[in-house]
Amino acid sequence: MTELKSVTVVIPTYKGAKWIGHTLNALRRQTFKNFDVLIVIKPSGDGTENILEDYKRSLKLTTIIQKHHGLIDALNIGFKEAKGEIVAFVDDDAIPSETWIEQIVETYEEMAVSAVAGDVISAVIKDESADSIEEKRSEVLPKYEHPIGEIGLKLWYRPLEGQENYLFYFTKAGVPHRNTALGTPHGVTQSLLGMGANMSFLRTAIKDFRFPTSMFTKHAYANEQYMGWWLWTKGHNVIFDPKIRVHHIVHGQSLGRLFHGKKIMNVESEIQLFFYRLLPHEKRLSWMYRIAYTTFRIAHCIKNMGKDRTYWYRLRGIIKGETLGLAWLISKKIKGSYSRA
Image 1 (tube, helix red, strand yellow):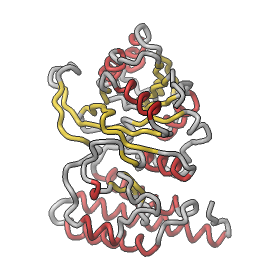
Image 2: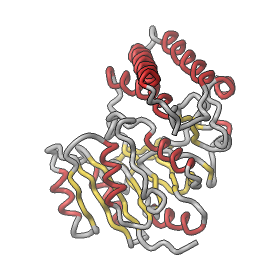
Image 3: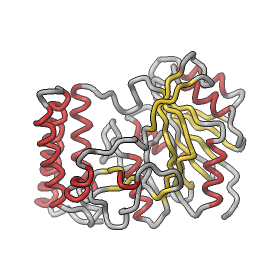
């Protein structure tokens, strides 16, 4: 492999003043030094801009102001403006290990890959110092298996052809899923991308890629897996490497999601809509698996509504997403504009 000499680290941020200093301090301690940092900031009045100015003395740091819209637009700006041979993304509330960039570069140099995802470990900061954190669990590799995992795999979680041995894959029902049959990988595994807090790409592989803004709402559900799927359809090799790690600070909010009430409903709606958004472009999707998947989700919500009110919002989101998706599909067919890409 050709030696890779430069990396751009992209950090989208919104209301990140409380945490982003931990992220930037971790970048200052990186063992690999030939990188720049691109901050895509949506102003919120919380003083993030002042914090970033302080770090320009110790990091090669550029800021771009995002005036409108949400996370998907910030990611697209990052793709467009990054100059490094490798483009790495990390969240504004994540703390990369000191060897994070070094290990990313080594993985690309040692393997014929175009995109690499790493592990994300939830953590609590004990005394406002990133040197004193308590690890909780992996957010990418949960240590439990769904009690009906095998049944689900046969009935609604079956992978698209060619992704049977992927850690993260798209199902025939049009949703991303983790392959629990693989257990907990201790080495490099083929996979669609896991979490945006720890993912990277060869810039040459993504030069023609932009997220379709019509496909995503502000919740940006499964944007990582969608990008992994796009690279996979172009013949690129996409992997997960558990030794590439970042800590994700536990604080109950994120760039795209605040999980309560109507926001749960909107996320569930977006999950349902993914099938319809992929349908014109992915001939391996199956209506039979889709019906089984949706039936299971509705039944699961109805069963649990009495125990947990959030399932009421989930059910409403499923119905909303399915209604919107079918209406969109019917309108496209009536207009004669529906076709597979």
